[in-house]
Image 1 (cartoon, rainbow, N blue to C red):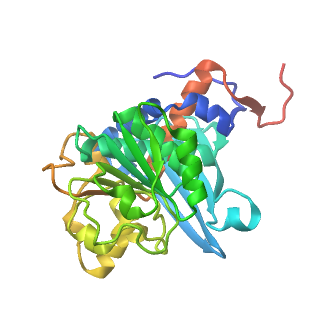
Image 2 (spheres, one colour; image 1 turned 60 degrees about the horizontal axis):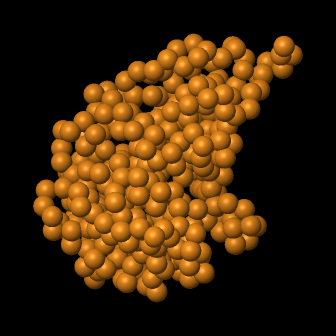
Image 3 (cartoon, rainbow, N blue to C red; image 1 turned 90 degrees about the vertical axis):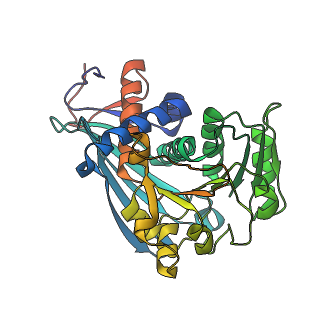
Length: 339
């Protein structure tokens, strides 16, 4: 879809507040669906990622060319410091996203990475759930009640008629706060005292933690559940026990990224799965080349490490919406005075 042309040196500046206005879950999910469908027909458009380990965390640079159309390019620089809130009262993940016109090279937008990452990560999990979860899913569990949890809940509610949500966090007060803030009469949220009690009879489970040890262990009964494992984005993080991966149908967003830094990485190193046992990636699912679930009782695990495809899809959608609605600030990069 054509977007009104901006002056050659004008950049759109989008805050987290702007992005929340522009990218509701349904808009974000649809943008991702379109991009992954295009990616299935143009595999060379897969995003690229570079990671650096630093004291206390990591830095990730994720870049992507809008699959198929090649209208836009986006690059995101994120610094991920799991102890940041505890030690400095700052967010775990901070960064910026830059969007450029891939046809003429113009920088188009700079936007907050914290919010964009939250929205696109949740939309990715919800999109995968539409392929991997049972169609009548009504019970959800969210493990980890940090900033990502609310985005996950909003996206799941946009995709499924959830009737009950249970949440767990090692910080019980944080779980209680999420439950209090997000409960509705038709979809109550309850804080659970343990992971086991959170996931019992869950149709959908999202793990969004910074854990270095599995939070879903092999003794849990997760038959029929769809699990979106989104917390492990580097080799040190670990949310899903390898034995669970070994008995699940495995879906991924990016097989190489998951194999090097996601929960798939741990399962591969434990020798319980091989890359050939990964059933499908999100592009195959979006293009209807493969099915995400084959039987009601099987465990389906979606391992998501994040990718530049997700970032460029969400960022391009946000830029288009902002241009049409005249949302966000404007900055002349050349420094020339504006009339």
